[in-house]
Amino acid sequence: MALTGLDIYKLLPKTNCRECGFPTCLAFAMQLAQKKVELTKCPYVSEAAKAQLDAASAPPIKLVTLGEGSFKVQIGEEQVLFRHDDKFYHETAIAVRINDDLDDSSFNARIEKIKKLLFQRIGFEIKVNLVALFNKSNDAGKFTSRAKELISKLPHGLILMSNNPAALKSAAEAVKTRRPLIFAADTSNFETLGKLSKDLNLPLAVKGKSLDELSNLTSKLKEMGVDEMILSLETDGNLLKEIEAQTLIRRAALKKSFRPLGYPTLSFAFAPDPYAEAANAVTSICKYAGIVVTDLVEPHHILPLLVARQNIYSNPQKPIAVEPKLYPIREPNENSPLMFTTNFSLTYFTVEGEVDASRVPSWILAVDTEGLSVLTAYSGDKLNEKVVAAAMKKADVENKVKHRKIIIPGLVAVMSGALEEELGGKWKVIVGPKEAAYLPKFLKETWRPD
Ligand code: SF4
Image 1 (spheres, rainbow, N blue to C red):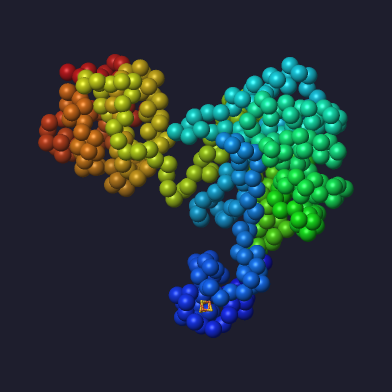
Image 2 (image 1 turned 120 degrees about the vertical axis):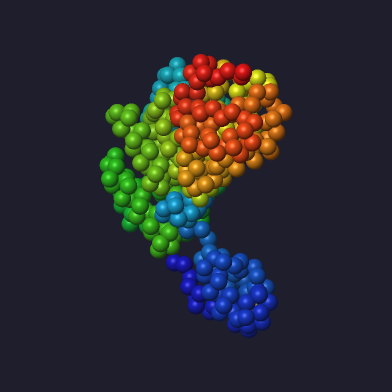
């Protein structure tokens, strides 16, 4: 449980020496309880008190690290139940399952598909992070050789899934440098797998049929010295149970500071229909899963998951924005069209994509609207004729194009007169389409520099 200000006060020296910058130890304790000050500000805390206070101030959900290099993922250390209260910090890792009993050609074909599950969206790389190797063969040798094969052919992190502790031991030892997740300790094997996790310093998934069973297991494993754990509640593919469990776990960790459930979670999205499976996965991403395991491997099935994750894990307080400046698309010259949009990433990259697809070399001026989209910025007065004129001046567009025409988004057609006036009547304002999708047609058929 979290310590109150009074609990903390009892552990302080109570000399009121003021060296921490507060008039009394009690005032300091109150601030510490609200996490507004660091314990290090008091130089006189005893080692025993420090250990107690450090444990109490540990994050309510443990941070767990899997994989390595550019495919290293960290999950956990979330602070809020609702994204708009702050933000979600460590995005859900997406894992694609692969069975170890596939014949070589099917195994390699699936690896090749997994390699392609990497996309660019609004200036960011979004990708599948993990591969979940399932010991369907129940053969420890086969499982280990497939695990070795995977790390030689893919850079992804691994989840080693088996009901056989000997197979898990053999595979985990063989690929431990990749920092795989061992799946999973339960009431029948937790001592063996806890020891394996501790000996190899690898994270351990813990599975149980109820939250009580899970918390009993994590408490016992914690006593054994296992630090990084991931919770997996068996919900038999019932999405309602899944959401309920994920919510209860997150609430217990954040609101009750209940340490035995203070770990990230793992969900299985499996469903007979790929679209139902994608919907399961997206639901779990929205509702707190640290890892989602899926059988989906087609790009058109996986991309919606990655896009949903990117949206949920963006900062709602700070829209994703591109640098406000003039962007040349396809080597434009002084006769190329000039248009503006806002610096909200989603807007900018949508416009950029359409302009690029038109194959008409163009200039796009991304106006600084603090990352707001066109209509939102216009309604909030972040996008008006003065802002656009200032952005044009700053980007020196007068010396980039010979013509004096600027294309404005159709959604702010109402601004055209005021903008022409603001630009001293030297520029002609052309109202572009309302939807970026119509830009290629507009640029090819309507645009003329003279
Ligand atoms: S520095 Fe420590 S002992 Fe001194 S007032 Fe602050 S909390 Fe109390």
